[in-house]
Image (cartoon, helix red, strand yellow):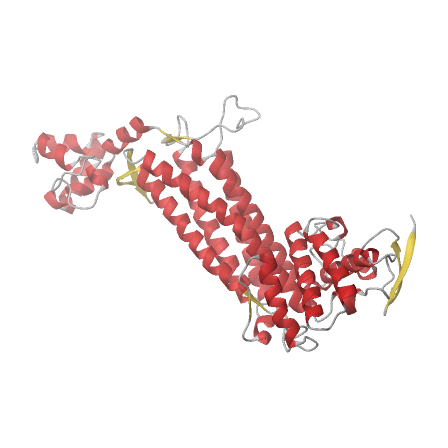
Length: 470
């Protein structure tokens, strides 16, 4: 393989002659063969958008000549359009603060810009990765800005999928509104509830999560771009900073703004911690929902068998005909991973010292991973599970009517202690509560029919005092 020689203040390195990356990227490749996971394509795109915006801002501020600036802008746009991504090769586990990734981007864009101007890769007299592509910038303001723009972009996709799942649960809630079942607390029989009420609760739960994610994502619109190395803005012309915010807002479509205290936002990872926490909250709610669905679908003969879930694959390599809740199980695993990612982000966020948190690459990777797998998981859950759920209506009504959970409806008429004694007798004799009440002639059949109307028991009020059957 043909090589070219590049040098920095540590010495010289042989670089593949055709490669767009340079010596600092080569050093990162030698140092950080850890996970073999490369940056997400959206992260690369966001990085290139910053370099594009910076080139334009530096030209407007009179800090970069138009010949170099336009070449850098053109090269950056090519990366935004998806070209040269395979030259972004630095492992996500890398040097602190993301310097390796930033230099990888600077070198790729510089070498492509050199080509655009008719030069050969590595001839940094034409365009230098530091002095021209990275002009007015530091890794410490470009990298967190990349994190913010990437999260904002990926959040748009996630919210679209979350909204779709909310709609699916609302559709099922209407479909199951007249399906009566036994409620459960502590996994034991409780008062009756409608399956539609449960599914409506799931929809409302996820709608709240959607609003929380949207609210937390707005904090990511605040940038420290122009803060440079430690938040003081050294080497960043005020005209450049002003133009930078305008350019990035226009390029991304987000209403970005400069932080009031650049020193504070350069040190603190609070916005990312908050954002991760709302993703974790969504994961927690989804775990509860998936566990409910797994329990409701358990059986078909030895479980609850309240719902039928779509069969997406054979459930066993040895037990013929077995069907498992595979989609819900997969969603659970996704949620557990996101909870773990949040714990990692928490630890990394508190590990900053003085003017910088050097653990940003770890925070970035885990946040992006959470957004990616959550978005894909939501789509899977909606399409392959929720949309295809069917209710075992007659079975659920049969169980609800025989459940001792309906005893609660008798409290206003017989009192708690008397009703509890009747439940105890019914359980001992293996009879229904209705049968015991009639045997003891405590109420007539007509009175019981009215009070123990299971649909009526799913509505607010005192059983038997109003007619709510639909």
